Length: 96
Image (cartoon, rainbow, N blue to C red; front, side):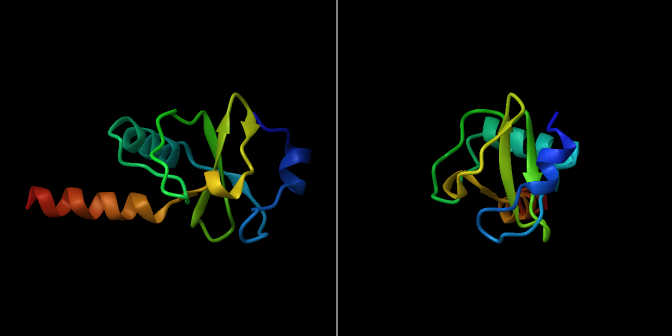
């Protein structure tokens, strides 16, 4: 778990907005996409390591991965959460 004092000073390296701990449902969805080889970082690298947790920026657009309670604050490693919406749309379209 990330210490609340640390969380209060961390900012999104891309938007400079405050970060909050991501909902477990978001982490689970991202990890399912990672397991399927369908999740990429902002620099289009396919992710292979499941997240332990994550930090979401204020508008909910970016997720900073957390591994072993250490936030990865490299902006290149951020995950654009729009990918989840796109995957959901493809899944919905494929089931129709």
